[in-house]
Image (cartoon, rainbow, N blue to C red):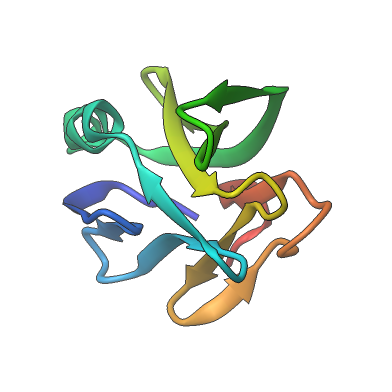
Length: 131
């Protein structure tokens, strides 16, 4: 499948890549109870640079999830995605803030159908497996 990125919509909790053919891949982060998840500002800006490129692969990368102690009440965990196109690979960072007992997760949807697994499967999109 050729998924040439025509449009990128980057919000706090989701990134949607739309192809020239009208297909859409939505990457959405969500926090467990008592936590919130969001994409970094820089990552939302970086995905804009993918316009016109062919999307190949989106993977959740194990980067030894980074824990940041913001204060006595808020812990932040930093996660990463790797988005690969025909021209480059970029890292997209997302964060989860909680009281230290909860975390977040990411889901992917291709044309509103879930792709990859919510937990465990690191591949969220693979163009070679799409029709």
